[in-house]
Length: 482
Image 1 (cartoon, rainbow, N blue to C red):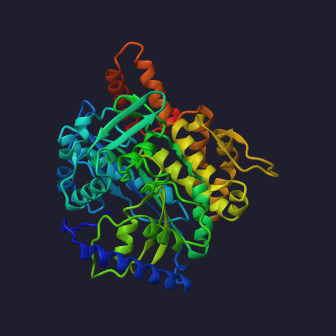
Image 2: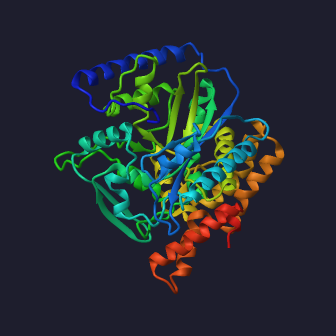
Image 3: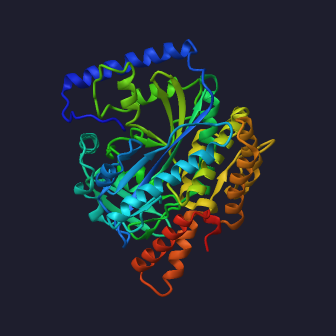
């Protein structure tokens, strides 16, 4: 969906041709994979960070295109809403100090964008959801005025045929309706890419799925939306509901799977089945035809199904496979995001070798259960986790699971030849977060509760965000925030 295009109207013949190309490209991809041509290349890491643009009172500022014009940086792009933007980091090799390199690039760009924002009387924030958003900030005029977003909005809305229903129950409850997919733009993420060889893709992807609940809990940073205290990672529920094109049919006992989902099962053979599944289960919504790229239609369609861990086939000159981790939130600090990335990669790498032993003890439906419990309760969650000599499923504290697996995460990073000093530093950030039991979400909720002893909810949110921004700029990891 990052593609730039101008076409906005599509006819029946174009849809039919698009579907025909999808199945042809699935065949072509299968042939390519059968020839085992996607093994070359060292492990590399990439990332994308989505940001909020706000005014001095922490209301959204719709100035993303103004900032992009001034910055003139091809790594910066618009996002769905006019108060969001995205920075695409340069890919780095995994060996050595990859996270230090990413850290330096990200800090430099954030400083540059903030300098531009200062001139527009605005501020840049890395936070999963801006708590002060209101209904007026999610209307059509807030959407970035580009063809790809107009097409997406129309396609999802046409499939739905009625307003999107948001129903999230946490510490408090939110029920609302919205006619626009601008709701999806309320979510900002730190999306991590890990290049993997074809021969290890199945195990690596299953390992990523297995550990994602742990990552969601330890990185949670989105507990507030529309002035309400909801889930520790409210993004997970909001994203799924905000572009859910399905409508309940009272005369049916089943529903199509949602376009935003954790998955439909453990991967059995390899990456091809994930592409084939998306073609078979989800109708095309942007049937853009290409004459330049042999896999353009398959990539376009795959990008309009939002798996929380997405398989990526890069069909460019250096053809390769990646796993895109999409469940991590933006913020709170660059150091926190680097530690989250290191934990994700280290655990995925380390658990991949014996992942069959784990998933044989955990049916996929319970991995999905873990995902949503981690999103709702964060570090307070209790999940179902495989046990040695297991005789039955057992519920355990997610904190205990993460703590026990930290040495494995360090081993996984060492297998990728990340320097020991870098590993020790980033794992210590996670250890301190666990020891103090303080994520971005927990800090936000505690700080709002503290201010609410003497202030209104709205004033408390603003006071919290003022402190959040100052802490974010100073850069100490969230475990050290007062």
